[in-house]
Image 1 (cartoon, helix red, strand yellow):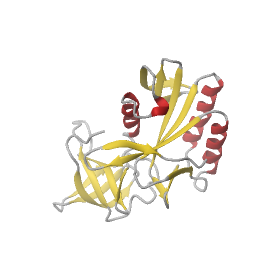
Image 2 (tube, helix red, strand yellow):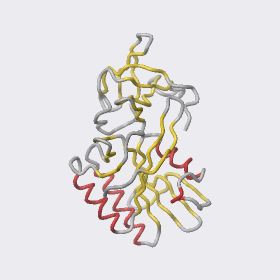
Image 3 (tube, rainbow, N blue to C red):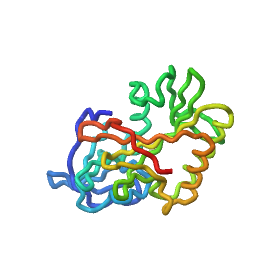
Length: 230
């Protein structure tokens, strides 16, 4: 996924009301940027951090800027949760994910389960339900999910198990929007219920994949597999 218009550097002043961030641009101007991330963003919202914004070209948008990246310990981290589905979809279409090759149809946001929508539905041959989660939390060299309690995420795991019981493939896909992790694990201390649900889903046949990204101010692309510790 390319940032076609390029990104603008700034320094984070503060993130507040979950979806807003004050940023001081290199020109000295202070702007309000949309923060497309409902998580806690642990370790990603320190005042003074170098951040990258994209200009919002949508004439209906209330804000002129979107927060895209933050630099943490010398590495870039993608905080925009609107991107992972698109990144994973494109990687599947480009046959960059060996485990998900061979499907002729890829659809997004298809209704399934109990009033839910699956992020990606792969079809022909068969059906493969793919739920995508954005991962930004790191502890040491370990990527962790979630960064806050997520009842919705636990519900998604149960629905993936239901798809397996119906004879379909179901995949929990964790996209690590940073390149400085060597292992993935559920964040048991943050949400033990989710962590337990993930382990049970895995035992029930839900496949778990984790890939991390390579990030620059020009683009975000899927890079390599991250080993699992479930």
